[in-house]
Length: 351
Image (cartoon, rainbow, N blue to C red; front, side, top):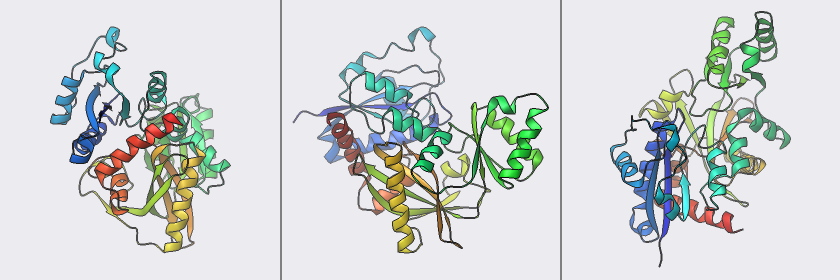
């Protein structure tokens, strides 16, 4: 049997570069297990922080060391891809954040006319931009927290406009609230604010990351997550819960062992878990996602309300990541999960 050559794309131009390397190392290990090794040949491609694509030999070294390269390349070489890229049968992008799960790399892979794991341009773009995502969730009838969309130009405006903007946020959402760049992941640039001075600083900080910013009302709730796998007829995993002692689920808490606790399955009523699974699939279909996604919810135990927080179309694949752990509890091992994602990519490409 001819083996498929899988191009593993990792690294990338985002603040989640190091997380991408961690995810890629795990996926590479899964592709090397007995069952997958008979089906697939791995061809790694590391994208440096400056956007330069490294050939498989250097990329393999990054996978082995787990450390990003510090060298910078000339801009003249940015779009001269390694010759080995022509040999790839199917791409497995595991690029988290901007330039990786926002539709940009998906557009490039679409132009290459090769199948690739995960959502296409539309699903990726909607899943990345928190404002567009919430608009789609609203159209789909999914309940969510109150929020306001803000632009950098409003924040970095004249001294008369900015105070009025802060007044509007206070009157509409109150405190505490969360200020987030619309197009970053892994809690980068996110602030929890409890007063006017914190709000002003948080807005300025978020505007340094993105020209689109979202401000959300804070809620007292349990944070639960559900993994989705499939294309047009997706399935949902068991529901998991995250607990932590930090003020909120920030970058350090997510990616430092021992900072957060994952409970799988979540200790919630079966009826609530079923509703979350149904809403996770509804959200997945609402943005036209494909292959995989993790959907995050707030469960307000006192009222029984379930509010959707966000969808992540390329969730982390590290040893600490919720997505593979949810499927492991649901009966799908990590290597089999990687295999299924590749097969789903082929299915979508050929449909």
